[in-house]
Image (tube, rainbow, N blue to C red; front, side):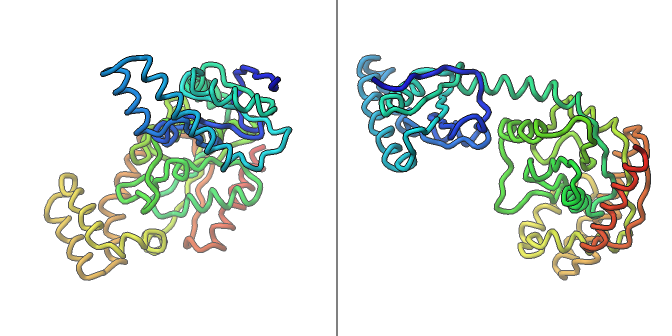
Length: 352
């Protein structure tokens, strides 16, 4: 007799030895419970094949062929990813809606003797919890916005605050995008909107509501990712600390952080061409000339002066945030960033 199978609504991965997602690879790639392990009982191609059999031949043949595929794939997972699991292994298994895929996997795990859990409602239930959490949790948190023109080192300042024990939310890291026209991360594609929201909820669930959370000033979109409305509203009304850094220092900092753009001229030229509708042919022609000449410092300073700074100034004026302090920063070197983070924490301690 196998171990019992328990249906549960609890999906938090810390409660189990492993969360096993038996959906197809494409479903898993689009979104999954953070920390879950993909063990599909059918590949995308196999699911499509079974769907064709169902439509063109019969439901009976589809179930028969599908069951064979599921059995073989579960056996493969048992002999590979689950090969070394001990007798007291406790997995949570789920599929799309808590149906046959997860039940088949759970039954075999139970027969082995593992205390097995299945997620009631499957991924769809988890997704509802994510949306509800993003509606409720941000309203319970207090934010302090780190503001400053592009190139002020705000992301590094957030990291410096975290190093000194403060709570911070790095939205650009979660969105895999630096939040500007030239901000996409090479070799790091943005997650889906759903995956971003899953990771965002996982991040804010760990915050202490009694302590402030530092966050960078962002627009409502980070690349292709849309910030949840409740969180966005909290950010645009939160008090801010403004970082003031010279344009030359900011240009130097950007060049150190965007090296991949200066290494791929064709990609950079395409991005600048895409700015023609906003800045006109004359201005973008100047930028293209600076790219051809590899005059990176002047290009960075001109982009800041004509594109980034006006856009930032306009966005700051759009939202009436309380200004807690303004910090003058001579450059964005690591020692300066560390000192800025310490000064920010000093401001917060003084206010408390």
